Length: 273
Image 1 (spheres, rainbow, N blue to C red):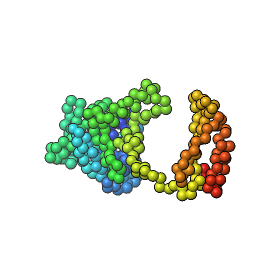
Image 2: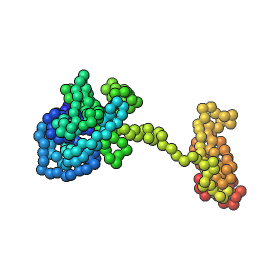
Image 3: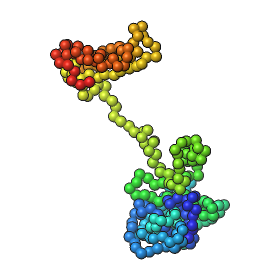
Image 4: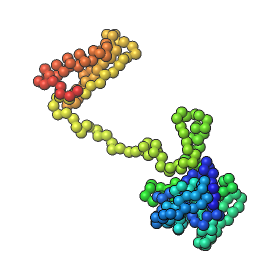
């Protein structure tokens, strides 16, 4: 079996393997049919032997010339501790398919001699342009296509920024799988209901609900020496009052006097500020 370089391949990468008699998948969520197994181990997986937890069916999405082709793999072993996923050449041959190798790449064909997948040689191993479909999730992760994409440029920038120390606190695990879901993009595109032209919950009684704000200090003193002001808005009448302040600490006293005026005018002091 292939012992892939863990620093180069991730657990969701698919590698062609001429030594294994079964396909191997590391992700349980990828199985559409699954049978639990016990007391079964496989030798020469990663640094030694690994336990087989189950067996079932996995749908793999291959990227071929910009198109996504689905191919179903049967009797796939679920080995969570495997360093990566393996596609068995002998198992593919048994199903009537075959593989062509040339110029550092490979092409997988089905029984009808149609291309179902492609790969390229990395460190004497053939890595496939493929990811297992993860049922129930938004979409499957795929290896980068041959044509550079925005995601490829973004990921390359991130890795360059980390290696050259351009960003503080950025750490990237090269063996991790980049999710096709970009949280920042989702949040940036989130929509909300338009704001109403008028507030839906306004005070009904004049002088009861006052909205206030303090501004300052001004960069230049006014003629009267004012540096701050406090604005007070009656939520029921939408009448605004502006009171000028020389010091921010004067605000409390000024608001108290404003409350006295409201009580004199409407018979009751403000209830909420």
